[in-house]
Image 1: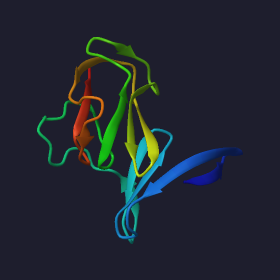
Image 2 (image 1 turned 45 degrees about the vertical axis):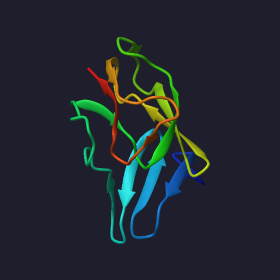
Image 3 (image 1 turned 90 degrees about the horizontal axis):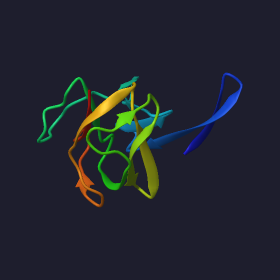
Image 4 (image 1 turned 90 degrees about the vertical axis):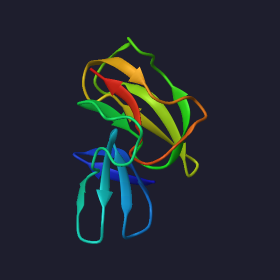
Length: 122
């Protein structure tokens, strides 16, 4: 966990993983960093559910701590929809835009792998 000053504000940035494959979590967004560059984490990957245009995925292997929405719920951009727990940290997953929850693909207490689809938004 790092405290970063950005545009005159202090913000918290979470970093996890080995040096050759770092995961960075900042303001509800996930980035992946290798030895030569930082880029947004790729969506998709091995999972059982095909992602929709607005699927929220697990940024790293984690346990589902709390699910704060259900199918049919309206969510606002930036709202926390699910909380994951990994490496003794809570990782809130936020809605990327105003949307309606189409489906929830996990249960509280479930262990999920990186890139697993958790929630579909429409």
